[in-house]
Length: 219
Image (cartoon, rainbow, N blue to C red; front, side, top):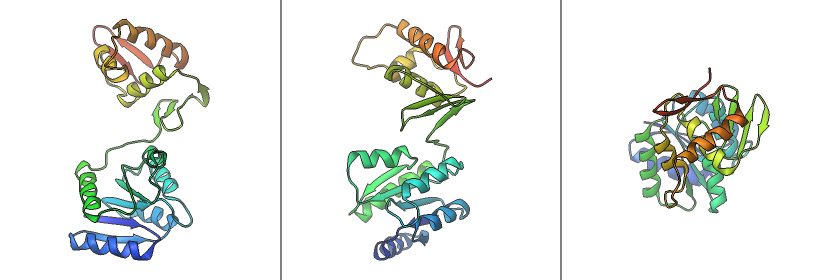
């Protein structure tokens, strides 16, 4: 397995590199954001360990750029910032996991192995179906560049359908994943909110499959 470590603290980078090499990994190191981005694009790595605070280009910008270019290299982000919003920012921008400094090497290794087991399926930070886009981090929806205002429930429903693009999703599944399981919700609530969505995003994208559910897809 080939790994890329992007870390500007030389002592930290050497320690992580030595530890991973001792575990049998082939490890390259980059000391700044632009170098790390270029190596991640073309190095054929199996995973990347990426610091947030880097010279030239932050770790957030590196991972956003990779995802924008459809590079799905698994990314474990490292940061001295341990706030919940910092961690959320890292994950929302496209990282697969987030570990705060100082950290246990045993935990780093376990999380890295978990990433490698999962591989690199596509996990776009911004969802796209035709000319409809949804940015979960920014809570923004646009169609053909025009902003669409959705309620929290409409947004959650649309996000779930977009993540299942092209699949038929049943009312029961939507109730389970979009509505609060602790609350009693009438099955026709799905129909009502699908109607709201159609009026806002357009009727052409959201199809009713009689007796089965709904399918969101670009024609």
